[in-house]
Image (tube, rainbow, N blue to C red):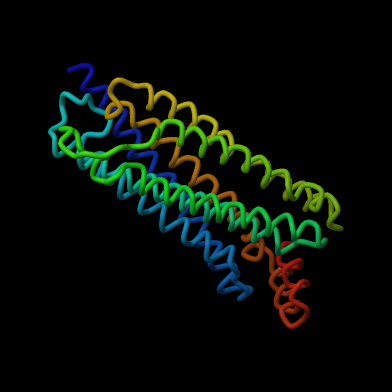
Length: 293
């Protein structure tokens, strides 16, 4: 019974953490929407993408409850065949939502960068990185849904379906490594531009801190990679699925929150609202630049 109690505690910890982190991300996105849609009335692709990311995160949270109901985190000996099949199907949905979520978050950040892009080179780098992520997401989406042929081979625990499956462990390692590398690239991309913006030192420090906090999401990606290794090497993946989902939720919710911080200044600054509204009648590039001041 002691082992069962510890497993229940781990499961409860995942549920509580997921609810809290999703709630925090929701608050940030709601405040972002108030700022962009109501106060300055200047929404852009970055806002719509972060809303999509939040909806995917809420979908992920629902999926975690489905996994909980099918005894995620408990030994396989406690699961019925239906539990295991439902678990695998829910895991497939999680994989698709995770890749879509990461795509929405990262492209949202890149479109936010374009709001204060002041050089053609920086704009080209942003658009190139967006295109790279679009291709990467398409590959992940296709491979995830085609990882077994036919797909129901994935949850054929009885071995009655003829077919083959790819080496999902290698694929997970590849996608995780790609995400970590692009996390670092996206964090480093605006540093020179931010340094060159003619703003008070206090504002520059605040901007660097915002992007600095985003490094924690990158750290979460690294930790998630370690949990994937533990999960894929486990003799009982049903019991070891807690940490992978926990760190996936932490990664996406922190990324959503950090991506929204830079859009919140008009809420707390009447001067910012006046500047932005005045700029809205001018050049489009001026608008993108001044929104981020």
